[in-house]
Amino acid sequence: KQEVTQIPAALSVPEGENLVLNCSFTDSAIYNLQWFRQDPGKGLTSLLLIQSSQREQTSGRLNASLDKSSGRSTLYIAASQPGDSATYLCALNPGTGGTSYGKLTFGQGTILTVHP
Amino acid sequence: EAQVTQNPRYLITVTGKKLTVTCSQNMNHEYMSWYRQDPGLGLRQIYYSMNVEVTDKGDVPEGYKVSRKEKRNFPLILESPSPNQTSLYFCASSLYAGSTGYNEQFFGPGTRLTVL
Image 1 (cartoon, rainbow over the protein chains, first blue to last red):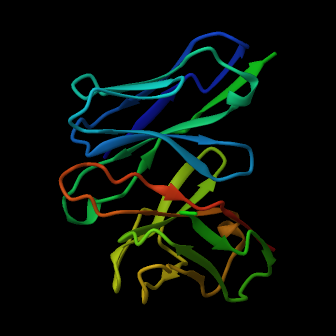
Image 2: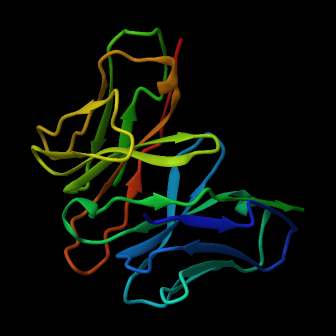
């Protein structure tokens, strides 16, 4: 059974810092990996999706990498801002095989606080 | 605007009173899914649907029913709600991407349900 772990559970940084959020998983047979942002009491906003065949994806100040062999993904946030404060979740899609399609297995999330 | 909508956003009900939470997407997505989010347990999948009239159980289906009569709608039904179903519920949808791995999932804003 796929297990997804996110470290650290919480992170507090001053504005302007570059930071890295980590996501590790136990089964490398994945279809894709998606990073989400969740603001308190709100829904999930998709940030980046990395297909199984890709190594990284970039969107603005965000860069996500994927290393299937080591079971790791990282989300890099450059020049952090107070508006980046949220919970960041990684989620794995385990594969195309029949009933597993589309089923996301989520990590517990990293709560990020960026203070001015 | 491409989106997933859920109704109601907030609901307080009593044990045993049947309720339905609606979910609708306007992106012509084949795949739809329901998750619940609980503190300390993260997001867990309840049911999913690969297409019209095709549904299957996720990780925590007990106490829930779903139907997929139209492509855009995927209602979640609680026939006899109990207090342990108090949770934050999310609906999600995505395209069927075949072998490409590009099936980015889009989430609704969430429904906060309290069962007394």
